[in-house]
Amino acid sequence: MTLLKKYADKNDYPFFENTPLYHRSDKIDIPLALFLPRAGLVLFEDKEWRYKELCNAKASKASHAQSSQNSLAFENIGDFIKEKFVDLSGHDDIVIFNFVIMEQLSEEEFDLLDESFHHLLPKERILFRDSTLEEIEEKFQKLQSKKRPYTVQNTLPFIFSQYTILDKEKIYFANKEQRAFIDKPLKNFETLCGDRQSGKSTSVIQKALLEKLEHPDKKITILTPTNLHADLLKQTLLELVEHSSVVLDMNAIVIHTPLELLELYKKRRDYSDVIFVDDALLMEEEFLSYIKQTQKERALLFVESQKDRTSLTFSHSYYGKIEFVKNREFPTLMKKLANLLKNDDKSDILIFASAHDFEDMKEDIESFTGIELSFVDTDKPLREQKLTRIKLCSHDEKNPLHGDYVFLMQSCQSDKNALEHLAKSSKTKSFILYEDECDTILELKNLLEKSNAKDKKE
Image 1: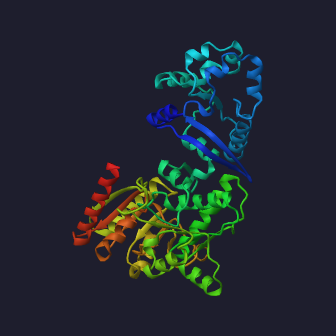
Image 2 (image 1 turned 90 degrees about the horizontal axis):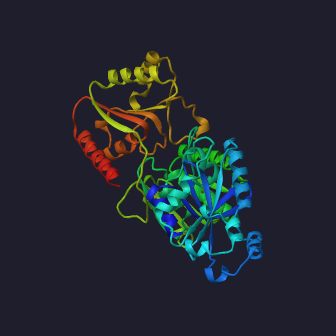
């Protein structure tokens, strides 16, 4: 098993140990699994058989071993995985291979066993005590699948749904850090840190889902800074449940703003077993101290932007490129908008500017593009806002929205830390427009250079 993990790490193949699978209201554990892009999913059974125990055994013992609970084949698990994969992906082409790990048996010892074992357990499907990484690779090379090419994204999110990361229509598989966080037992108080678009919020929702599936009686609450943020998390929760084919009451996980929670606690002291505080740094320090006090005997997790002192960290982030453009701001915005709209008629665009200029900007941009614009109000619920694909936003660090393209204007009038946060809101590219150099622009360039250098190092 240690050798198999070394093989997986060396080739950067996802490897799973004692990982639960959830399907509707069922749960089943995979003892060991390895994903091979060229083949599919490989399931492993760890056998403790020794040569002394098997050297005089015949086919009868082998047959008994085959029919035992710990036998090779994993037929039930394999069927479970295939059903889940078909339900969620719509493709009936996942291939599952079975292997045995025999760390107590050498290849030479296996050759000396009765022929019945060789029929029951083909040698090419066994990893022995003395197997090398090269020999393992040679055996896996023979598993070439004739089905469509497998990738992490078109396979694993539909199998291990607790690791599914959604981004609009796109489905991603959680990275190693995110999976480790989702699987990690909760403590009384911990902090999860990561940059913008590092998958913190979705991972928190997945962690909450997993806690609820494992412990149905637990009361779980997620706190968010704004009503808009809360609605976006509720939307993500709904989509994740739809993609995982689990049965879950949507009210089982409560999502509140600080004000809503305080109002609830005034009526009754109905404390949660687990509280996740998303974007904790955007909340009042007094409120955070209050939550720490009320949850001191219960599980509590603060989710924050990147800091040096933390217990859990997401080092990878997926925001788009950032470009500084020194020119007249509004004409540059119009020119770049025209190019974007000409080449891409589906992208979401966020424009951050001073709220005092929103009405005039809205009228001019709508006249120029022929596309309706909307204002973003973080304090209002999503249902009360008609958000269009081009959105005008104030320089508000509490804005949880992401866009394919982001424009930052009038930056010299805003805070550099808020601007850094907003610049990382794009999935493809952010444009920071300015006419004259100022201290804020210089400091922002320095902040982003340090952030990029840190990302490359990690």
